[in-house]
Amino acid sequence: MIDHIAGAEVVVCSPTRNYVTLKITTADGVVGYGDATLNGRELAVASYLRDHVAPLLIGRDASRIEDTWQLLYRGAYWRRGPVTMAAIGAVDVALWDIKGKTLGQPVYQLLGGAVRDRVLTYTHAMGWELPALLDAVDALRERGFRAVRAQSGIPGLDTVYGVHRDCSGYEPAARSTAAPEEVWDSSAYLRHVPGLLAEVRRHVGEGLELLHDTHHRLTPQQAARFAAAVEAVDLFWLEDVTPAENQDALRLVRGHSTTPLAIGEVFNSIWDCHRLIEHQLIDFVRAAVSHAGGISHMRKIHALADVHQVRGAPHGPSDVSPITLGASLHVGLATPNFAIQEYMGYDPLVGDVFPGAWSFDDGYLHPGDAPGIGVALNEELAAKYPYEPAYLPVARQRDGSITDW
Ligand code: GCO
Ligand code: MG
Image (tube, rainbow, N blue to C red):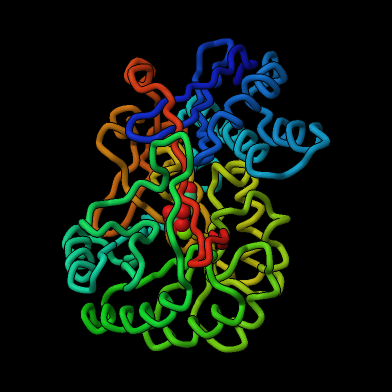
């Protein structure tokens, strides 16, 4: 028997970076956690949950996950959007967590059970120059990764998002009250990166999946040219090759290349991607469980994608919390057309604040068999790391105008 909701609290903490966590408690003391982190806009979701959603949850039957989703989505009148959908996603995941804990089952069992034994994952290799990048790829291979996203510096630019000159890992948002700015030059990128990726392929041979992320920065023509130029690299995918709003752009890209395309980390509902899926303009849909309305809504996106042989490959940067990673792995284990899970990794402190049952082995992840999602929040530790403003960088072209992200 699942009881009614007695409490809904929001915890904002910053163990190396900001995370927003929703904690729902039932009258009989079962606790469910959901991740509501929206990088650089954390407090907007925290307020949405605290001020507008929590009061609606109190007293509701915690077993009615879909009905609660419908209430929050349809009932608000104002639909979609990253803040709304991240808030709904947190409620949804917390309620799945409660259902699993009450029934004594990991969530993947409630989704129909495992359709695979483990979930393939990829992580990030960064190197400003080719030798550093190759070293980074080799080191990840040593750790067991079978798929690696390769990003490099660009001659003539001082900084490139996600790539440090000193080869250290990157944090998507820098702690600061204003977004740091960097200069971007698509021509320099187009001249340099296809050759560099060809070198990476030559170095690794056939046994490693390679991915590359263009962070939505190219025009349709540039994207088509780039996708064709990297054809021989045999990428597992080319990610976010154009901004996600201009979806017809992908027809031009498709017309010039068979390089697989992945888009979706900024999507927050099925309405952002249904045309891309129906017209088969993408091969992988990358919406994250936390940003796209939770497990319930991700199931619908993946079901539609399955009809069109598009596969799920959720966003998994360090700016979604381990609760989202855990939730995503339950979906991955139980979803036939799930391809791969991004796993950027976390600072050990983040692992202490969010102790989890999921594990990495031999290039694959598994959500574990703890009841529910299997990721908790250590509130005492979290309280030691209060929110600190942090923002993603803004990119400007050489003439000073803001470019696409
Ligand atoms: C990825 C990304 C991230 C995002 C970041 C935004 O593929 O993991 O593109 O680095 O930029 O998550 O908040
Ligand atoms: Mg990306």
